[in-house]
Image (cartoon, rainbow, N blue to C red; front, side, top):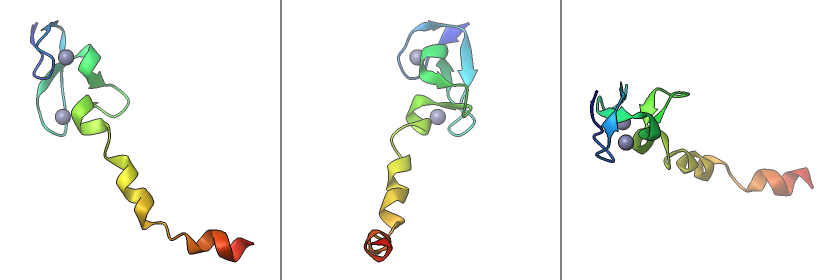
Length: 59
Ligand SMILES: [Zn+2]
Ligand SMILES: [Zn+2]
């Protein structure tokens, strides 16, 4: 038991494998083993690597 580093709630805690913070079940993503701050919001960056020209060549 302890205090979540993200939301401040008390409860069972998990350790984020990226930032190492202790976070509660609400703030932890078991699929990735990371907290919500590490697992969310950054994946869209890779979309910009895809050139739009691929769509034009297909037509
Ligand atoms: Zn939390
Ligand atoms: Zn984290």
